Image (tube, rainbow, N blue to C red; front, side, top):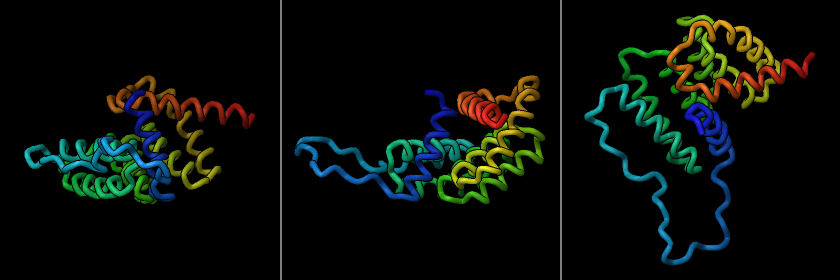
Length: 190
């Protein structure tokens, strides 16, 4: 599974996990000799890393916590990752996208949308900004905003193919998924 799709799935699962709490525990206890993994594990020493490396490492740990269904670790690590983001001396569209994912997982939809806006101010028609907007619209159940974002995304898609960006390659699978969903939605509205 590509990293981009993992991010999208993790984002949606993470938001649901934070909203609804962890899934119910099984009524059957594990066997006495079964190893139960630590919920979030010890924090790694990241003090020797650059601020960008710290942010990326913490972001990865948030995605891991989301995949494990560990809402407590997800929220704690998301807070730490956002602190690391705030310490960056410069940010690019990819870092803003990752910060928006973190905000969205913690229910900070308006902050995520503000980051999408900053991406668009720096790079008109940037696909990751539309991906953020579309994800927030979907999570909020805002069909009108989702349709509008899908149309903007599709309009920017052709231009993006002529001017590929590194971050598009890093998030190719999730962008392709959003493209397919936007195309299908456009086809059903005709």
